[in-house]
Length: 307
Length: 295
Image (cartoon, rainbow over the protein chains, first blue to last red):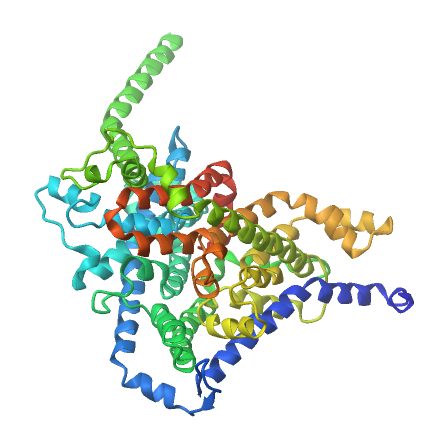
């Protein structure tokens, strides 16, 4: 039955096997990714709910977007969130990484503690943060009160809700810390030794050696961080449900509302495509900048046998 | 005489070392305070969650906050399982996450093996395409996926939360491929001479050697599947199907925040398996994130 197979040359067999091995991904890619993307694009030109058959409306969904103040509110909120949290992620993450970049008793355990919150990022933790933010009995304002500071109303006020969501996300800074630690490990020790001989102090070493050497890592985490921040949904949904007065309405939350609460699938697809375009822009930034390839370098250069 | 000089210089050196140590001592103390203080700051919310969960309701709402509940009210943890079918939610989550992770690890290692160990036309271009999808936001494909699974009649079943992961995930493929690349080709050649096929090379040689990498991928996948919220939110509508994340959300809307202790107890129950898993396999997580630079 497999006679035709045994008649193939070895390299033909290998080629066939190769395609068979990656078949799960190929199917998944065509159906769940490429196909879904095209469908999403097509849907953004339709008016579609589940009640009546979909109708073609041309660019009307996109025209509607331009007049939709709520959409722009979501666009702005998401940008503030995504761009606003990254300086904190980098400064805090890098500070902790520098602090823990030494071999000493207890350092390993401390890394674990810093990293733990980024593993637990579900609804449970979002509920915990609602309680943390309680203006009168929550831990944060109780702590501020120790210093005589009257804390704000956090997620219950328009001006503090979005900063509140950023605070929650910063609790997960441990994963960035780990990436920076890996970057710091990659800086050759000889550079520091040579600088010491030249009489350079710690500050000089940091700005002249450490920072330039890990800048590809910083850039990479900056861009991927922005990309992932643009997809914020869970915390905005659980902590504030977009409120108060849409102060924390994010793009994905808006897509969710339009699609699954108001059943405007076409319009929601249009919003989703705008989000996709923004993310694509940042992704191109990653791929264009050669320094960002730092993580893939080893993989792409070594392409297996025979090459 | 020369010996005396040596002894003298040794004593001098020791004195210098001690002076250096003394000079550094304040810095070391500062380091310890900063590093340890920061670590405490990161763990305090968990302690606060646990402390609140063991309080009587009245004691949760006092200022300044009490850290050690008096009396310690353990029975709230029983309420967690009786007010809501939390046990069922946990069981559902284990099944759904378990099946999704199993499929993810199996399919991703097949795909990674293909990309790493076999030569075929267009391989490198296809791999770059795969890397590009690392950045593809889950939420852009949310609506088409929903429509597809609706057409298949899979809404309000677990299938949409499991089946897509049986077609590999980019991050897992990337990590496993990196690992497969490091395996020596001499082993392969020897096995081929013994008549091993490609599936043997994968199943008997590559996969057993890749156990640490599979550990990394599985751990990271378990955590993301356990925490997954968007998918169960849009696909599951009857309570007996709920996973823990949507179960907690339902609890939140039903209980509101007057009953903080029971909410915090539920949250503790939901997070505890993750914390245990994390401490059991933390080296896998650290490796995974350091290697991929993702998350």
